[in-house]
Amino acid sequence: MSRFCLFIPVVFGFWASAVGAESSERPPNIFIAISDDVSFPHAGAYGSRMVHTPAFDRTAASGALFRNAFCAAPGCSPSRAALLTGRHIWMIEEAGTHASYFQTKYRTFPEVLGDAGYFCGSTGKAWGPGNFKKNGRTENPAGRTYGGRGGYVAGFKKFLDARPENQPFCFWFGSHDAHRGFTKDAGINAGKKLADAEVPAFLPDAPEIRSDLLDYAFEIDRFDRDCDTMLKMLQEHGELENTLVIITSDNGMAFPRAKRRNCHAPFLSTRDRAGRNNSQCNTIQLRGCFPGRPPSMPSRAARRRSCFGA
Image (cartoon, rainbow, N blue to C red; front, side):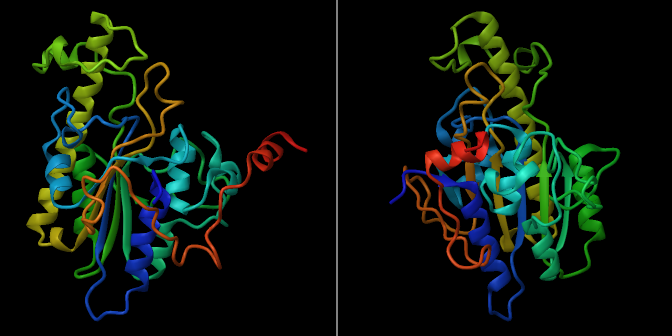
């Protein structure tokens, strides 16, 4: 049993199940909510007390809560590109680097789902930062953008209103929470106490650090409230029971020794309870994503040659 799981195989395992299902029933919808720069274990379901995440916790209780989930890269663009393509970052050229390009030859799961009859869209921070139009794309690799006045929730409402009746959908909600910069003292002004802050061992335990962590926690709470509103919208539309819900983050929190060195992230899904509360989880086979065997990890020497030349 593997001691960790990657976002890529988990998502694509569910994707392959949805696309390849031989059933008269309508395929499941897919709702992905991805926060920005949030580290494990900062959700109530993991025992964190400096955050208030009822939507995450409630969803985790009815699904699979992963404790050893790792993103593919410690930066926004490459991590999201890996998640979207099901490929390691060294396999997708510019898309595997930060704030670059995304070649059309690397198809994303929303594009494949669209070909299979899904209605796909996104709001907020999808793939980025970067210039997806440079190589001929007309839409963000995560799906057509729905936004405007009213923020993320309004974007989701526009998407639901535009979706043809009874068509399965895939929606990507990309929040900018909890990316810096934080609003100073937002956490304290919201009622959080300095004593509530959970200071990791690699940071100095000082009032300024505690206050900064509470500002970070405030944004996690806000992300969770947006998730809660969108999940309730799905319930009102009668779609929640037939929707795979994934809530996660792209990389670690924006603190010293955290973002770039921490790829351990919160992760949950709702279509399989097998991994719930388990400290270990298997990777799900990449069915349908690659011809033949899924790609394996190259040796350290091969990776060095790829990055630095022979």
